[in-house]
Image 1 (tube, rainbow, N blue to C red):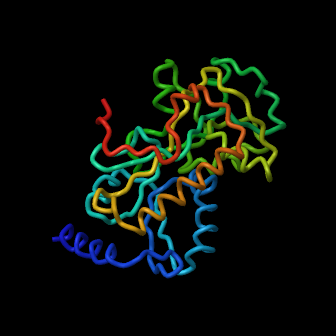
Image 2 (cartoon, rainbow, N blue to C red):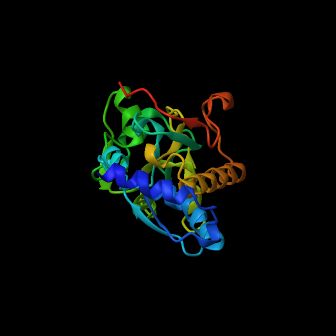
Image 3 (tube, helix red, strand yellow):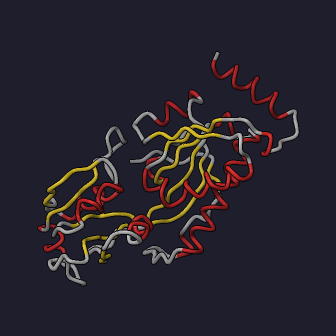
Length: 258
């Protein structure tokens, strides 16, 4: 019944010429604090100018995003692509990588960080409540052997900088987010001893919304703002440029994770 009603609503919307300036709609989006800070705040600023009646409801990632997409209860999910459902269309937004970060006064954090030093130092680590599987960095660290010395567990990447400033603790964060916090905090970036592969943040939407004019318009804004962000950031990605998916590269479905 829910899907039938959505089909009817979308077919009615598609009959009228689409004008963003007259759009009155609340978009429900699942995304992380990291994506909110580095990308989505720019999306909100642009939408406010082009479609002032549009509003947003932002929610933290959970392990139920596939169900929410299937029911049409969210308009978009923005996550690393390997967390994505295989049953809904998706598209790449931008590529990111993880780095080690510490306070500028942290004398234990050397410019060339060895693996043993990295693992033995006190970490502020992220444990995303309710998120599927484990945080991005855990899947790579697990293959390296010993566990990290975790002093503090937090709920999001944005909580790491305030807890390492003035201490000898370190954290592992997306590069773009560290550079954001460097504007206001004395943070130093150090390359990880075993650089993690770059990962792709992607956007996914319900299959029923594939031809929805409002969804198409919002996707275009996401792709354009992701491209703008990528051209202004100095990202040194470990994978080859030809291997990266450009913003807006469309994938109707992907194979399930092993």
